[in-house]
Image 1 (spheres, rainbow, N blue to C red):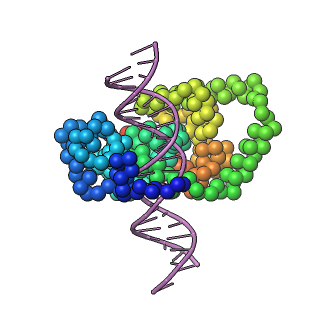
Image 2 (image 1 turned 120 degrees about the vertical axis):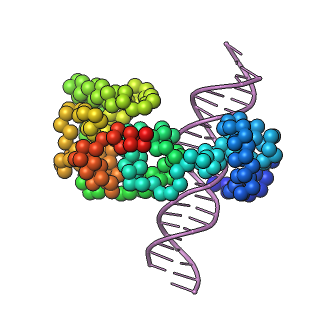
Image 3 (image 1 turned 60 degrees about the vertical axis):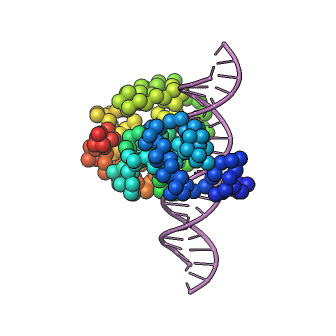
Length: 239
DNA sequence: AACAATTGCAACCGCAAAAAA
DNA sequence: ATTTTTTGCGGTTGCAATTGT
């Protein structure tokens, strides 16, 4: 990178870098009086030498009074993992299910805890096999296509129960393809082919698509599934 | 004790969508 | 209807703190 030449100094009239306690005070005072929004006008009204973007970010990620401080709990972690399997890197969407947590926080947590975890051998084998199949069968046969459509329908069934989940048809397709585990998880009843065999050890390889980078937490998901714990249950406990 | 490597997190950037002019 | 401005999102970076050698 070209380096933050203006870190802590004025760049184009704007201050950058870490916020001072005084700046925080000014921002808090302003939001308390005028509410959130109109971020770009804050510098004019308060004299704060921070861009609107910077103000919004500071408020949303750090100063908001409803933020939950402290470590992510195992309960929250489970939700993050499962919602990530469901939605991918839609951090803001995931954050909506975790009151008091920000998208930035969740994104950071995910990256530091899971992004780099190495796949287990079983999963690596399954992944290799999957990729091989992809090469050998670039085109779906009719029956497979029918099954895929069925899977998409199943996924739609799940998604209708998820708050404000809005996926394009193409995204639905991607999800059913990428995250077979999700369609196997119980969500107020079995979905998919109805086998619900996630607790079967042999299923690990079948679901690598959602877990090959998550094997560290396989036991947790497995246990949760066996215990009949649903994501819906977990999320709802927050409300 | 000193140095190197890793981790965690705040804050930045570019881009796209939404809202306002 | 079009252009401009603002807002929000996801990816990335820099740096302090922590951990390992």
